[in-house]
Every structure is written in structure tokens, then in C-alpha cells.
Length: 159
Ligand SMILES: [Zn+2]
Image (cartoon, rainbow, N blue to C red; front, side, top):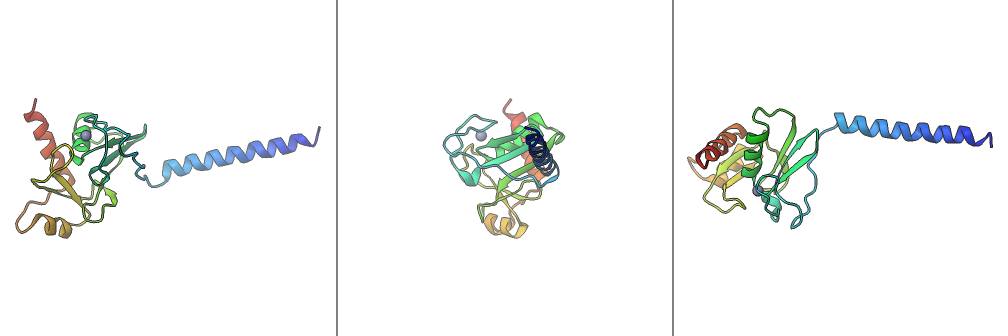
């Protein structure tokens, strides 16, 4: 029986190390977007089922991930629940050109009279050039904060 104890101890230490390292990696590591179960998960702002991946967005806090059907829904949620960005670790939108996840804070935004799930008509791009190519000559390209301001004003108008 005596030989079993060192084994149990080694095992416990190993488990402890694994938990500690995964915790540290989680804390310090780069925040990544979570996969969305399309047709199943619902938008944290409007409650609609999320069906279209290219329009979907995510907001990550210490508590977890909020998922959205439309870029506008995420921006409105950010305005309502994190007005100064407090507690927000990262935000993600899809690049309309590549359909890949990109960081929302550094993206360029175009408002177009085209369909999006909640009719905000907002499209995100990783570069200003791509946004201009999509929007056409002379169109307004928004930064994250300009897009946020647009949704904030829209929200005020509808109340
Ligand atoms: Zn929504």
C-alpha cells in the first residue's frame, strides 16, 4: 500500500500543474472568437436565432461570450451594457471580403442600403482599401467608434 501514495501524490501534482497552466494560458493568452451553432444559438441583443455566419459578431468579457446576429446588435449591446468598454476583453466581427473573424476595434465599417439580419446595413473590413472598394467612390468609411456612435444615435432615436 505504501508505494501507492507517491503515485497518487505525483498524479495530484500533475493535475494541479495542468489546471494552473491552462488557467494562466486562458488569462494571458490571446482571446479568440467562439464557434457559433448556427440556427440554434440566439442573439444576445435582439433574441433572434443566429443563422448567417458572415453577419455574426461576438463580444468577450471575463464572464463569457455574447453572440450576435448582426454587427449593429453587438454595437447596441456594447452601448447599453459597456458604455465605456469596461470589462470588454475583445470584440469580433467578420471581414465581409474574406468572411474571416477579425477584431472589431480595428476594423473599417461601411453602411450600405443592403440586407443584414437586423437591417443595420453595417459591413466590416480589415482594411480601408477593401472598405472603399466595397462602398465605392466618395463613400464614408467609419472607424469602430464612428460605427458605435451611429448605432448609439439610432438607439436614442427609436426610444
Ligand atoms: Zn440581433
